[in-house]
Image 1 (cartoon, rainbow, N blue to C red):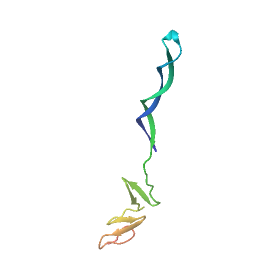
Image 2 (image 1 turned 90 degrees about the vertical axis):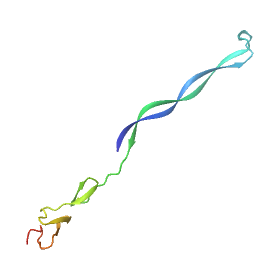
Image 3 (image 1 turned 180 degrees about the vertical axis):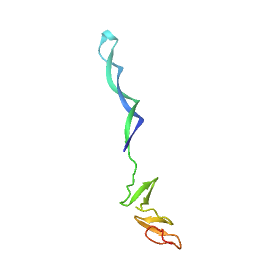
Image 4 (image 1 turned 60 degrees about the horizontal axis):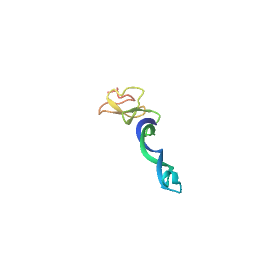
Length: 100
């Protein structure tokens, strides 16, 4: 997981004043009222994001996005095809492909 800064919207409350007719003769039959209204506002926030991460099996190591087999001894005339297993070029043999 990792955190990313994002701009997010939210409902910001505010006091809205309005007038209504009433029986108050001193204020010309107009009374003040309050109500909570909401407007869209923005703020910075942190969002946790996730990404898939592979884990290589024993005997393999990660290179880029791949799991590569690991040979304890270098494959002299061949290539490592699975943990401690070399595939030798034609004419070469042995566990590390060094016998001609």
